[in-house]
Image 1 (cartoon, helix red, strand yellow):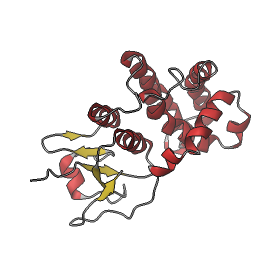
Image 2 (image 1 turned 180 degrees about the horizontal axis):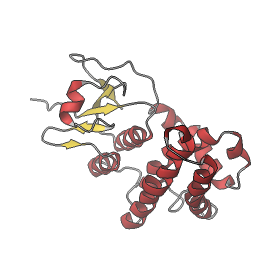
Image 3 (image 1 turned 90 degrees about the horizontal axis):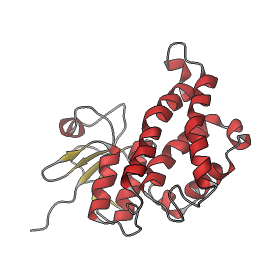
Image 4 (image 1 turned 45 degrees about the vertical axis):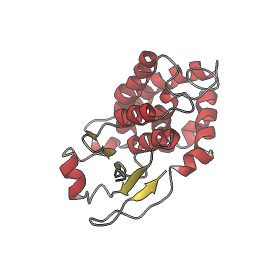
Length: 212
């Protein structure tokens, strides 16, 4: 009997879901992708993970509903490009700076009207703490931890993409040429395009979309 493929609940534009799809894609693990609309979350997803955020990976005996944990699970199944080769503690530390302080400032910069007394320029400046750290690394190497891409690159890139889109004209003139080149290489790649295909909203009773 053939085991059922894992189910991945995803939303195309969510950076957390993007990072999960990137790791699943590179690992070669096959999943059934269920594209969701966040204002109309399916009951099956909420039953698996009541917190109602994506990604949600449903395995036979486990549910993984944190994006970084999905990445680590996928790379544990297969890591043909060596994303886990750099020191894991160092990578997780840099990812934590993205997921914590940077994301805090990103949200209040991009969605300032949603937060009481949020000053978008103040939060843009706060986000630059991570940008400066990334610029320093990328001035020395092609990728964050050397000449090859790693977990840290692909965990962080979707959030830099989101920030750059929110910053618009400022971004092109900002003093981060190496970060811009790193991001442009990512968004212009076949790899990125392959995980950004548009799929219809999944409906209960339908099969998922085989991915990758």
